[in-house]
Length: 348
Ligand code: SAM
Image (tube, rainbow, N blue to C red; front, side):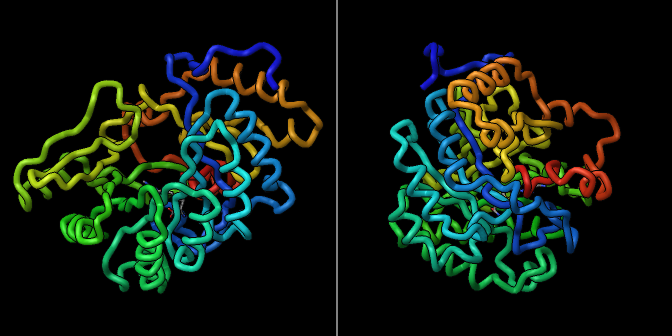
């Protein structure tokens, strides 16, 4: 497909390989989590601009030939996209793809978990921030806590290679639940990852004092369970640093705010409308939709992707960590002017 075979993996300006792609399939979400989409209403991407399944599938083939062998479907809430299993089955046919996963809030998972598994989805991560329905009602403006619990159980019984839970820890919201969430995951036989609150696009209420650091999370769990061992291995590229309790129970912490991992970040993101972003904090992306819809052939698109990756020097989280007087990255007006800056548009 690509004229001259390129040496793989493609490496960026800091030697980071192009391997992982997160694909946002919709910018819409049925929750209003305070750390992500705190407003009632948003400027949505025009429907005609959203990539079709065929367009996503074609890009997956091009990225696959360039060494991307892991794809995660995300959003917005990916299960709001009609017929998602059809996309999963298209993508799972790519021989280059070794891992196909989904990040979801779980509210709609119970009814589609098995279909997604049968279509070829390998792994599922559910966002699960609180055990208390009333808190979810306040924090995410949703009464669907019971549906999420059903989604978790449906995922567990559908035969996925892996089911994980993600909990963003926000001071004053759920920082008193770290131990309970851990215990819940353990009882369900699932690995949980605690995520530091990040000052990404939609997090307009972000402030450093609401961030519960990796160290605080570890201290809380150490007080409850005793010594914790880091499972970090040299060269690990995963965003989560993994740990184990003495009894072997494993969990992760994603410390993007206090200990950014830009130097090993091999992730890029495709927005629902086909903009390819090289960093969660990146300002602008390569417009792949325009290339697709203007008749560019695969070799041309691949060449543009390869040259864009080679020029990548982004290290957004590290730059944010160095910023003096750090506050929310954007205010709501600038997000309304450019919805591609939103976390839910670019795919968290
Ligand atoms: N709707 C899906 C979900 O809830 O998992 C997928 C999209 S969501 C944007 C993906 C992930 O981003 C979730 O795990 C969410 O908790 C995380 N996220 C969103 N805003 C965040 C923030 N400000 N800081 C840290 N994580 C955030």
